[in-house]
Length: 175
Image (cartoon, rainbow, N blue to C red):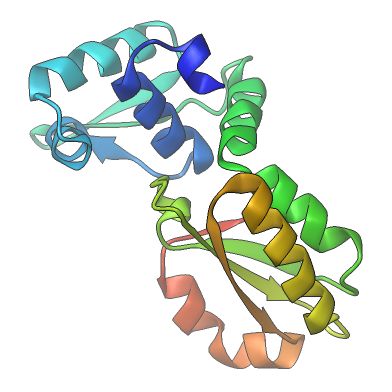
């Protein structure tokens, strides 16, 4: 889907990284190394997206950091397209529809950093959740999105005791 809209593979990777989690910010050489492209090619993409207003630029010392501009009028649509491409929207739809009382859901690690590694780590916090149903729904979601989903389910008390461990990891609170 994104390949048809955007001809640049680098631009697609940037959108995935920066629009999956708008709190993530990165600098040019870091992105160039991560995506295995030249700094010049990366700078061209970053400049184009920044000039269009899709990315914020912030200078810190000798580095310029880029992140998604969440105030841009198209941010919700781009973010939605990226989530649909990854399949996170379907995962959450599947899981949250019938699993019980859910307080919050976090995406952890790679996807929270905006990296499409093929493994989505999801932390679900809630009491009286149906673990068997979660496994069943995750299996269906994995087939639909062609990615592995690792689920951790904690009740409220367990999460309160261990939240610092989980939230020290890169995370993105979905709900």
